[in-house]
Length: 397
Image: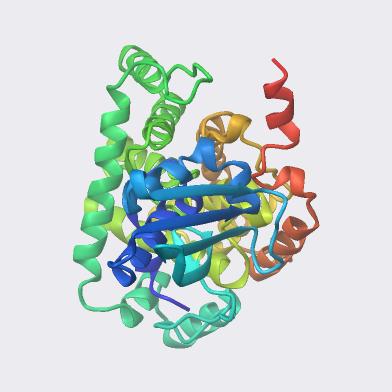
């Protein structure tokens, strides 16, 4: 399993798979073809279906050069390997000098057609299943955070500092920014109003809602956020961590440890399932974010390793089947509101798991396996194509 550094990434929204991934791919292709006179980029499947709303075309044009790049949308062509496919073609005169088919598989990560989805080039963890990790920790009598420290590089603490700083900067920008989000849906930012209400009548729920909305709205506007595990679900984890700092005076060091524990959960899903809405629906984004936040909270509350695992399982289990159906392909409706709901749900997951002493039947490994199969069983209309669900209903209004 890869480092958690490959999961938590700082970048611009609104989508890790549809904005960050294509940006990385375009930059790489540009570096490999500096002599090219012009480019043709073909977007397939979900990248084509929701690319306009996710600014996929804009980030590629910005990277390769607007005047010398043509974007072709082919939503009807869906690769079995992954629905987020891009083909880059570089030309001199009319001769193609290079082409590259690449897939944006979620969280800003890229894969090529001949790469195994469950294999990674720089694995740092010897275990790929949560049950194996728990057994290892039991044998060595260590916490999940100590397990992470044992396998990550020595600069882990500095990395977590950077990630937490980026999360909270996005959150604080969002709390004090008003106006209408771009894209044409005329969605008004709500975080600042919620936060004003919190300052007048402080409550746990209002602060969590405010914080989650703040980050999600920053993401929707193309601001700098952290994939946790994706851009579309980037408001959940920061919201609960911020609320714990503000309301319960949890030290920053404990918050960073909790962030790492949550990231381990996201890493397991990324390795054994998917964090791509185009592949498994929103259960792989907001559902996974809820599981990550629940694990972080359980760690902060002093939960055992088994209780942390159970809280994450609850968070994922109760988002099974959630569709990814953004109206007009924009990461706004229902995405922003879902961040706020999942952040509050994480508290329920943590509290419930601790009350049960971590005793349960369905494991996190089980839930991940079921999530992946459920996602693949979802019709295309409900996997980030804006063809069905709320996207269809919202488009008619």
